Length: 243
Image (spheres, rainbow, N blue to C red):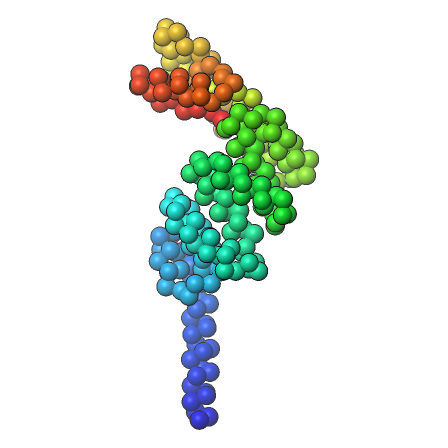
């Protein structure tokens, strides 16, 4: 009997060590960007909060949002006391945001703000809410969210994106080209003006070298921008609506 107990203890300790090492391997693969390998390893582990969390993160990275939602939902439903719970809620909202399902994303982000989850997630959540408001043409709400980030999280990494979002202004526009050479941007602008579009060129100096961006019109609502964008794409231009 004593021998059997010793064997069982040995098996338990050995299997626990192997499990720990496997989780470490999953984390290592994820950090190194080997997302599919991390997924394969995580699927071989027992379903706990940590394995579910890394499955959710890895599926987000390979843009498989339905699978990411599946595992993140499992985590928040089954492990409400997990140390990963707050982060999982934020990443679950991200899956909707990245799929441009803004209504669903906004509901989850607002729930996180209301219930004051992990404050480390708050600058990004506020930025997401500002981006959603911007894409809905709700400029006043956008400015309020950005102001909260500036007031409460001035040292956060999200501040650089705050400045970018503010730089877009309170309107929709359509970008049809970006060039390192100003003459190329001006050439495209001239071509579009001949087709009766209202065109302007923006000099972007955020990078090492300036980029000249060709944009069409400034719209107060997204539907108007969408209509012109469709027309431009039909004419062969790579139109993209901002913000």
